[in-house]
Amino acid sequence: MTGKAKPKKHTAKEIAAKADAATTNRGGGKAGLVDRTGLDKGGHAKFECPHCKVTAPDVKSMQIHHDARHPKIPFEEAKVTNLHATVAVAESSKPKPGIRGSLKK
Image (cartoon, rainbow, N blue to C red; front, side, top):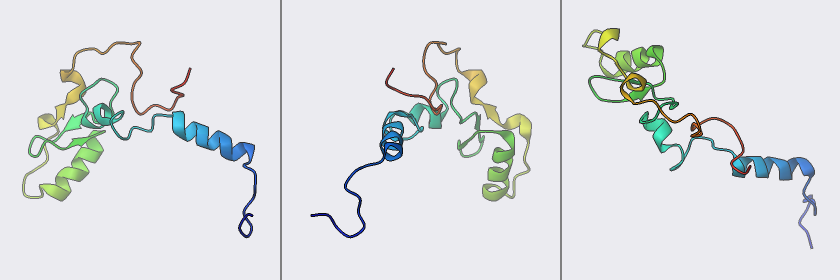
């Protein structure tokens, strides 16, 4: 027996959504660790705070972080570390994390 108002079958849209969620790299877990830490080219964490080593994707986000966490120290864009400039060139065949795409090909 089924419960109240619960369909017995799954729709094609629901099955496709589940397959997409299972096979797409969303940037979380171990697969997205390199992306979040900025250790690899293509990661979203591009800039690093010189005071607390927190990473941010762009200078504006870094300035927001700096104003919130280090209000007594003036923000100097020149002191912000660009992590992508310090990392060696990555392989072009290696898939970049955080980019939507099927893992099953």
